[in-house]
Length: 364
Ligand SMILES: NC(=O)c1ccc[n+]([C@@H]2O[C@H](COP(=O)([O-])OP(=O)(O)OC[C@H]3O[C@@H](n4cnc5c(N)ncnc54)[C@H](O)[C@@H]3O)[C@@H](O)[C@H]2O)c1
Ligand SMILES: [Zn+2]
Image (cartoon, rainbow, N blue to C red; front, side, top):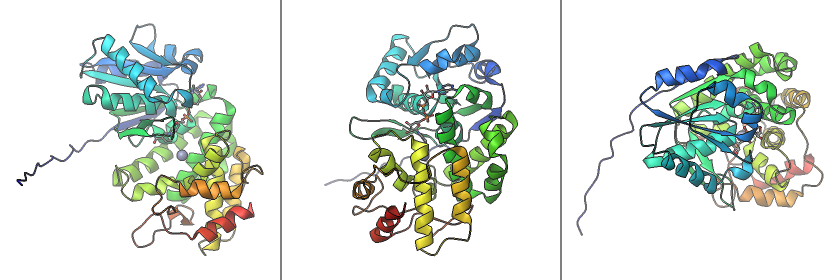
């Protein structure tokens, strides 16, 4: 037997800029044209962004190759949509000198990002996120992917964007339930990384819910700094990045058990309360902390108790199936105080006995 070793040059160190503003959508296209003048542009969006007038506001009167995902939302987040996008790009004779521009929520960003990562072995993408989830979470971090008929995000790639442009004004047309559920990821960021951000959210939650531009901009600023900081330290989710999973282990199980009737953020809110109860069982709680978290979720209008129709043993079974489970039981991200993740032996997700989790699920 002969063996050869192939050295893989390390990925070029690269950074990208996140621009945040209010009512900047109408001026972005000129900026993108100027910044990426040598690249052909291909826009991916969905039908609701078109009907809300955002696509027109974004592009102006110019004609640009555009793929409109229909129906909007998770049902289109599959490989067939990716195939349609790639074939539309081929039919337009686009090559590797193409820039994909994603205008939309997390589903548009995940689909377009995955399509960009595989089209001709990868072309750059910029994100213009338009939901509370996408502006706080999905547009930053480079995770892209689509669902199979069996599980969420079964196809996927890490594909970091070339730039992200956040206009908080586009959030004014977002459905109220979607808007509120998306705020849970912001609360999560505060809980894992920034006590001062939690205080800010607590004092300004009414203004956030009224969608006041100045607070939304400040919020975007906090979110991007926190998420970017975590991603920078661990771009491909080897360890630290797992802290972003706070509330998600129980949250994902709740989301699946509800038959996806509960939105992701609503399920994560329940998962964060479950994490708080686990923290109490493990001696990591502080007086009043969980009440503060419950109160902010109540104001946001997301659930803080398990819906009565979700069977506890079904939830435990779903937790065992968690993507990150080893030997059929996942580790849990916990906090020791607001803004500080509990880290044990260098691990950001720690072992919790199944009994403790079952006990907590029985308590809601
Ligand atoms: N890649 C990541 O790191 C990451 C992180 C979190 C979530 N996600 C993914 O994101 C997806 C959820 O994203 P989402 O919550 O943004 O949902 P979404 O993209 O489905 O948007 C929700 C709904 O709002 C509509 N919409 C979007 N922006 C609008 C606007 N400004 N005005 C009016 N309507 C608007 C959409 O058409 C859709 O009907 C999930 O698939 C999830 O897996 C990915
Ligand atoms: Zn999430």
